Length: 154
Image (cartoon, rainbow, N blue to C red; front, side):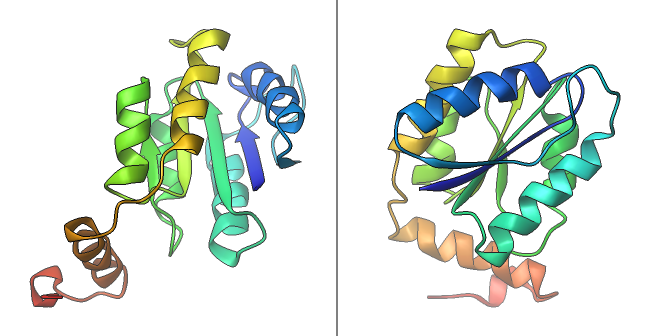
């Protein structure tokens, strides 16, 4: 799987740790974030990773900042991106199974390296269930198109 990773200055060290883990697992990892010890703004990294996922240049994206919140908000502004903030394995797994999240956002400040690895493993290991959840994801897509999600009935 091709995975784009992005981080701001508060998440860069955690992001670099993930690069090795994911590469060792056989994933094709593209690093799209700032350099160590350089301040940078989270919307820049979020946009770069979200565009890579939305365009198909990457299958999934992972974003890290201090809280994960700013990354999630910014990434979700890109059409076709369903970015989920997950700070535990249950929310990571459900974001994939129920919401077909294609970008994972995490807090580099509150999660340690071990927890980050576990959240990523849960997220990458979960598959979208479809069924009733597919209708809900289609409603999200309707909102992106400027349509009333209540009109989606399939």
